[in-house]
Amino acid sequence: MDIRDQERFWQAVQDNDSSFDGQFVYAERAAGVYCRPGCTARVPNHDNVDFFRLPEAAERAGFRPCQHCRPQMMTAHDPQARLIQQVCHYLNDELESSPTLDDIGTRFSVSPYHLQRTFKRMVGVTPRQYSEWLRIGCLKQRLRNGENVTDALYNVGYGSSSRLYERSDATLGMTPATYSRGGEGMYIHYTIVECDLGLLLVGMTEKGICAVHLGRNKAELVESLHAEYPAATIDHNPVAMCDWVTQILEHLNGRRPHLDLPMDVRATAFEGLVWKELVNIPLGQIRTYSEIAAAIGHPRAISAVEEAIHANPTAVLVPCHRAIGDDGKPSRYYQGRAEFSRQTLLTNEQQIVKAQKG
Image 1 (cartoon, helix red, strand yellow):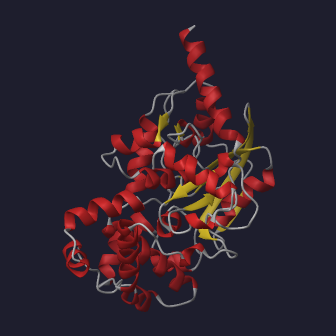
Image 2 (image 1 turned 180 degrees about the vertical axis):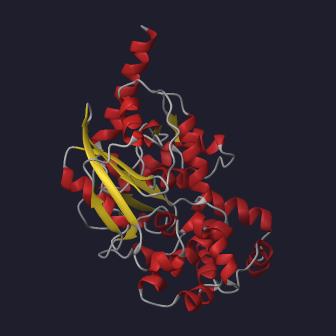
Image 3 (image 1 turned 180 degrees about the horizontal axis):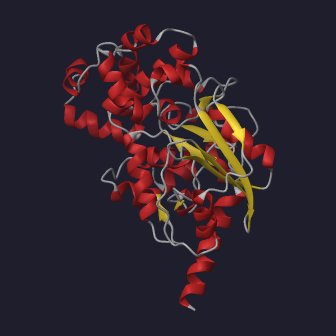
């Protein structure tokens, strides 16, 4: 979406111009909600707004629909956008049959190449990736609702349990049975220590580090850790000053340029690509979403890159503070993470680099 479109869209949001309904939706990062242009809710701060051509793209990026204006019911005006919206609905209806790109092309009388290119431009991922996202979301919901794993996996289109378990590490981060119990059976211990940047929380399992958060409020830091695994056993261990925590502190103080620590986090294959690229960004430097997308071989997946950055639960280890939007705005941060830490971390790194050169 070019800058001229963004300027027009922002003016439409300010004017609550319903004539733009069907052309785009806008999302407010702080609230995690997306709306129609004509929504009469309070106009958000421009710096906290993202624009999407389709409601499906906003939901794929992690936003939920506004309960007042019901933007998910919006029909796109543009013929290409309307086609992609119809494809999204079709994929949702056909989760069990898992249609191929050729199947979709035949269904909508469009070439698979054109379909793939247009879909990825408007939604940020391919039809196959979108379908897999729908399937995993449906699976999670069924598991949360108490459905047994065997029934749930067949009901969302997995032809065998092996297909699901092959993908569980990349999409769920644990076995589906464990996820359905909110992380029951997992043991996480954490410590909170003071550092030059405020408070540092490090959460750890027997496999590695599962959370790194910076902030000024202990309660908020702990809440972030509990949010992902509400049924896990999570203990505060103030003496857990193991070598991992020491290395992170040394890194923040500029005494350890690179970190190579074991991690135990949930990540999709795409998120893994993005996170690896973030680690490759030199200390104190920044890259835009577009530059990161191009570096991992998915130049059009800009929205998906931002979502992957937002999903990173391990600040510092995966330096999401080194990513900014193409408009110069900082990336959204993982749920509950203090916003101040992004600029604080970046400034700290730049000072370290300057001192090393001096």
